[in-house]
Image (cartoon, rainbow, N blue to C red; front, side):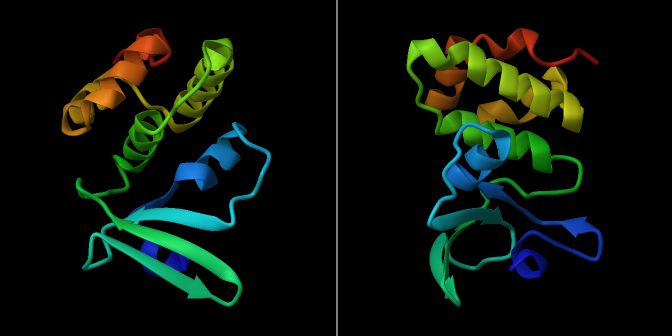
Length: 137
């Protein structure tokens, strides 16, 4: 699965998304029944695939995924779908900050792609006050 939709021969063309990524960030301890992947390598917009007992939801990326932008797009996709109680904002902000530092995402990286996302992404980004999470280049 990863070879076909995530990366091949050192070239990245996809990433885990949704609850799968939330679990990897530590937002959720539950392992999702259906793993979500966003990829360049699919002809249709959305496809459900079952391999063995595992279910995958594969989505076509609206922005071409590259080795340079994969973490930025993955984070923006996560922020787009993020719905939290106000009590959870600080925890979310801290986990996003840790991911951004680990993957070296800067404010300039976010600015380059955020306008290609829906308005809810801006709203969630603003509500979480993520501007001070990313380093400036």
